[in-house]
Length: 331
Ligand code: UT7
Image (cartoon, rainbow, N blue to C red):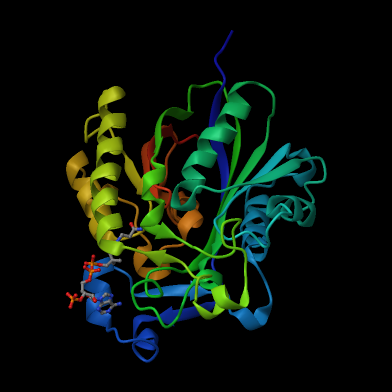
């Protein structure tokens, strides 16, 4: 019997219209374009303005609709919708369920997946196994985050980094050996003290005091996270290459989480990859958390060729991190 692999067969992406530049941030917090550019590689990010009254689902729906249109997909044939996100529309009710209904995926079940900046990567693993098992045929995986909803625009250590956006991919069975080949995924819960959000969860539900103390915004010990991200992202990418006997020549593209250009450069260097093989859009979108990887695929789709060997790598809160090796399935 032919082995079934899980391949990406369509992609879509969406970023909101409003552009928040480094220059604009200079008038909001004590920062400057030179610092942000040299330390992170970010020039601007997109923001879904609060007065628009929309949540993460708005971004996810737009990305999914673009995929459906471009890929000529019948939404009623979609079996499962997974929304990878750290900023669901609200607690309890599934954002993915709302997205599925809005895009017409009326025959699908749907759930959210939360693993901070690794959500999309871990989602790839989850949905691929649904396809490989033969249980489902069309699975839509969306990475979407409205990071601006949990950013403190008086805190220069976090507000300059993140942006809003969404990307979507469709996974389908493949009998040519294309799609997901291997994965190496990790988590270390001792890292949660360095990156997260204290308020709003079950440990610290919202109170007047928690709001006054600004506990409902993301915090990050940047230096510590940077140190872990640099070594762990490079380690797992190298491990995936070694395990699959991939040389730098074999790898067509590195698809790295867009947290900091310096982390991306270090990972590419360890893999021995030239800059021309590294997908990058951090300069335009900043860190969109769960959306970075699918937004890269959306931006680079036209340059991808059937059989291209892609190495994904991500690192995020939790800590969570990992790498996936995938063969691209279409021109
Ligand atoms: O996606 C999830 C995973 N997240 C990450 O991977 C992020 C990892 N961390 C980073 O990318 C970096 O640590 C940051 C970009 C967050 C910070 O860069 P850094 O080179 O680690 O800077 P730092 O925190 O060591 O700060 C250096 C200096 C400090 O001043 P002093 O103490 O040297 O006088 C900061 O106060 O830069 C100062 N600083 C700023 N200056 C201008 C911190 N933030 C800013 C700012 N503008 N926005």
